[in-house]
Image (cartoon, rainbow, N blue to C red; front, side):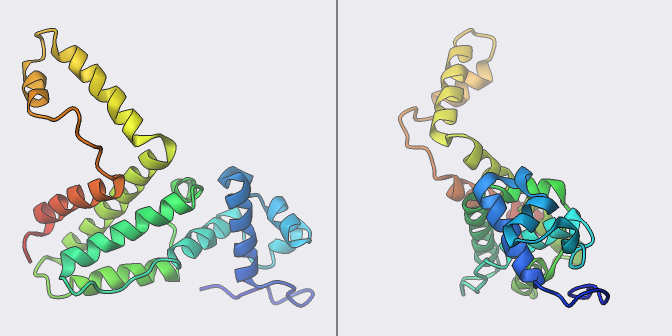
Length: 220
């Protein structure tokens, strides 16, 4: 919604896309915390003050970085209905978050970030829901919950080894269940297979998110 660069001073030496790409390179190399105006300017071979001709502040730069990741999303209809289309968006979102490990930190700093690529994704999801009888409010709530779950499962997956984490948790629960003070926990554990292979985190997200959609939106 803003001009590409300030209308005063010397002609623009860089495009907004070039500055965004430089910021992303810094984040990919050294993490989100390394993204400062000075560091990005150095990546471009210019001074930090010159960047303010293109973005008002670091917050604007973060918005551009977030939107650059959303731009990578492959958004196509599965041909299998709205639920399959939304779950594929969730899969793609988790893949992107795991590919760009700085992304969750950026979203945590700018949770209400907006941009054309995010609008494109939202339009795709709403198009999938266009024939669904749920209200507009309920549809947007469902998309918000989907985004939160994608971020949560991605965060777990990139910050720890899921199989090791599950194994440690299961070992402790089994230990506690033997004390006689947790009968319901003991009953649940008795019905599980301790040797079962851990589910892929992406598919865990998709499976549980499908249940959430069933509860929030119904069959449609």
